Length: 231
Ligand SMILES: *Cc1c(COP(=O)(O)O)cnc(C)c1O
Image (cartoon, rainbow, N blue to C red; front, side, top):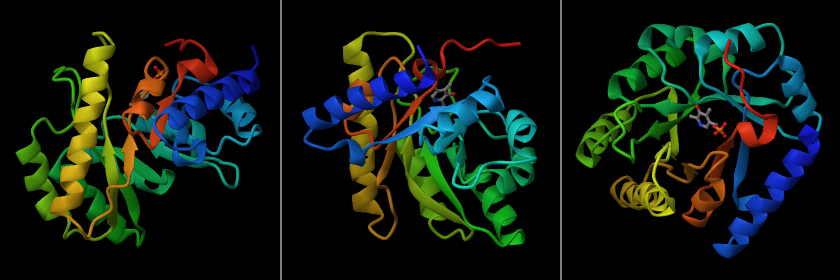
């Protein structure tokens, strides 16, 4: 199956799930997660009008995208970011969707001020209590961080991101996504001057469920590009 066919099928599934939750396809963005895949594969998908891409490692972003990136392509970091790599990644991406601590937000803020730029960010929340995942783990911890983040310049908060449980059935997965949705509602009430409109949740195996639970962005790798070959 060509990447174009895969893309069409995913968009159809997204549309179906969006309709089931009273929304339209245009209300849900597709991020193509291109980690481990080549620049050529990325360009092939970009040629099918897929604009938004996600990568999870700073080094891979540097290797693939520091020389060139086609006009109009947008790239976000979606993996854990170490503070000491902030200065490297800021000039290379259009968004950091995996901000998991106040310390990291402060680093991004000061790097952006230094470079005279503004970075859109999402806050990552661990909805499944799986220790292997990064992200804020408790509501009060998230709110305490947000109280201070709200005052930082150089970053623009746009919403929340989570990785659903990697094991467990539909019930567990849906309840993790529903948790992020409820958290979004609480954030909107607590911080009426901030933007929490993006809810990034759902991957190849669970994006239709995530859309039914309110996702406004899904992050799909395998279902678009095929299995990853880690070297
Ligand atoms: C790899 C990755 C994805 C995509 O996973 P697939 O199962 O291949 O669709 C989504 N989100 C994050 C944060 C990832 O690291």
